[in-house]
Image (cartoon, rainbow, N blue to C red):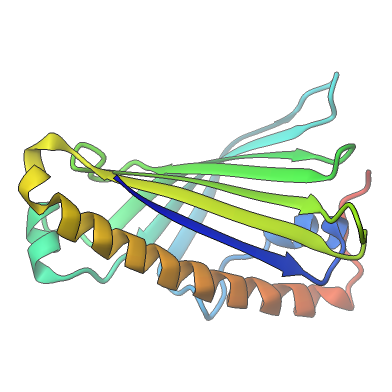
Length: 178
């Protein structure tokens, strides 16, 4: 099993970042994300937390060896569950791959929360684990290293794309009301 971690500070309020998170895709930095479909969305009447389940479709460019191991398809799917808590100013997103999960499991958690020392900033933390299944254990280290590298590359591009979305929405005044 391999791990990926990243953190970042966005120089935007949590409300602005939370509103922009729904418009992160499509963006020119992440062309591999080709569709996002909302499967379920509801608000817990007691806590006010908005829970959303989405299906994310990606077109991946992967080495031929991995493509053969994974059945030749370059289209992959992931399930994302997000919980936005406007009272505590926390947005948590968890996701896992649905495609080839019998061979490789990728689990990710992303948290956006208001910077307690400066409400005009938002703290971002991303964690992911990548683990190969037993059937491909002889290739596990190579495959896990590839996915960690790919994850890091996509995370950097994703943050850049998200910064572009934040900049674009800055003048529009969109925020999540607490």
